[in-house]
Length: 257
Image (cartoon, rainbow, N blue to C red; front, top):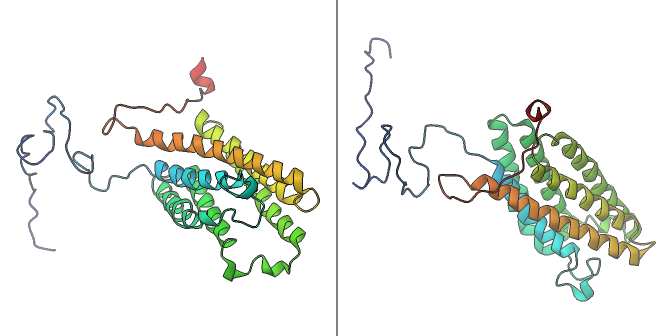
């Protein structure tokens, strides 16, 4: 406000550790273990958190569960293409964990200036939300094919192979990140490829389709397991644990010399 004298505000004196505030003394002396609920000592104003673990773990949890279903786990005759299930139970995860949580992580990556992270997390968040639409009977997606099973499975194949192409593009774009992320995309490409092929041949070659589908489910589980590791790596920080999950840095040409 005009005419008002601005005066510098001195920060409040810090209390010593052990007097109830649970914080360290930020005066350059030896650091001590903090005892805060958030595990963030002296949280700076507007400091941005790392959204990577949320996106990776949201993807990993949902993908792992779906992969087990596509392998036939717990289904009659271990048949992921039967009339029981096979993956309706993943609906909640697809909406909230793989879909919403991962999409939020993508928006947060945008805030920290990570174009690759924004594109990847928002894309796969949208994938899970769109995939969940197939699991809502009231939408009548499968009924729109009027009982033509070949037309429906072929449409699913087109849907999955498109995501295979997009995942391959992400794989190429990730070649200078780290070995763990590259492996996530490598097995994801294989998972989409095998699952799409299984749908393309579902009516003409049902036995071969079942085997290919289970192979795709196995690649999905492997992809999710690596994504678990990658997401966990972002949580293993010095402030909270002494455990480290190395991601395997890919040396760049100017670093290998």
